[in-house]
Length: 440
Image (tube, rainbow, N blue to C red; front, top):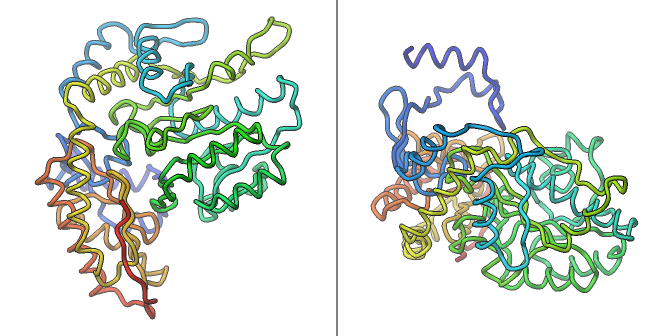
């Protein structure tokens, strides 16, 4: 089947996520046929640098031989077996490995299949813990302004991006919102409502979907201290930041913080298969133990919880971290990234560049909403051979951790050229005066 036939079938049958389909049908989007390393190739033979890790999940590059082989080997055993009343070796071995890598105190792993479900599980565990531990009035949650924790109802309830979430407001439970990165705002909420709060939920260090917003140094540690003072649980959502994205295996390790619950997904399998995990402390786990007729069981589960193929891929991905010294390589690449981004500091049309590790947000300024400047940069970059994706007027760069020095240089050069093209060709409003900065 040729590209035109595939595109016609796509427009006829497929409903794409976070996509206005009316606009989609007017564009010729690439149809990806194969990939290798950090390169994607479409059905017409065009090649692209994968500048967003196939939506922030690919870690070691596409078709990594160790992960490929692990999945093949597992296929020779069993592709799927339920975790309800049964278990299997890949899930057991992976849980042990994850606990050994996680911040201290996180001793239990509950599997699911996406970042949204990992967050939903953490919210439900926190709520149920207090309901059956003598503090039933702790029913509320504090999240951050512009938060994003997924698209299921509980995860949307603790979200704070109106564009994504306001439509569903009648379906949601009420939450308290602290100003992002403002510890005094968090302290005021906990002082006023602390006895009603079950947990604070936040992305540590970087708020990804908010536009790569970076918290001030020490903020996460201060939130942890406030939670302890008020008897509130801390949920760290590491779906985007986990598995080396900020330079350490998990972002909360940068401030020596151990949360009570931690959510991971995306990079857990190296970007191969859907898998997620919610970590919990032993104290939380034990609060769910009891006789059958006490009904303290955590009544939650998914058909594909702990899928053996996905767990095998995750184990292989963690082995790659060890064998290829991935985090050491990332440290060098982060330095290079910072240097490459410097030309953007004074670039016309750019308000700010925010970076932590390999997570970058380039905020554009002066364009009307209807111009879709971020999307125009995406199209211009695509024509030059790179796949990037914006968050509104913020152009996101988050390539695989395995990206080479040469590829990273090419990626940034393409994005600089794409932004310059859009600045020159797209009419802008009056531009506010600001100084661009690179946050490291």
